[in-house]
Image (cartoon, helix red, strand yellow):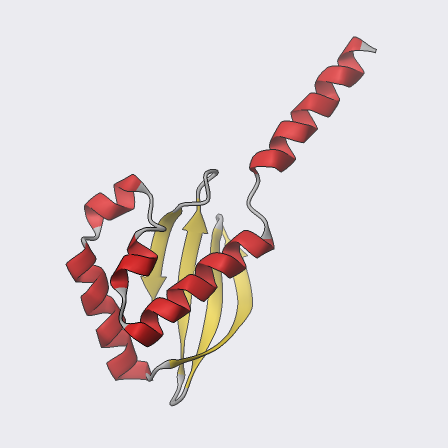
Length: 117
């Protein structure tokens, strides 16, 4: 009986701290809004402390504006493409073309990896 209790607690903690598709969808939607409006603060606030240290708000602003110039403004539509080593890849539709956005979330739902291709 005691082992069963421990196993149930272990599963409870695992599912309580795991990232869900809804968590990723929320992060992607926020990133798309940031691309549309050019508001780097929206996406920068979702970054982990380590990523905020690596990528400054100014660099994020450059990434957002550069991506919109190259691919067009996101239309708000996105499709999950694949997951590899915890990094999820999404195809983001724009008014002109499309691009790939790769993100990875930590246990506390902060973005630990963010790149555009």
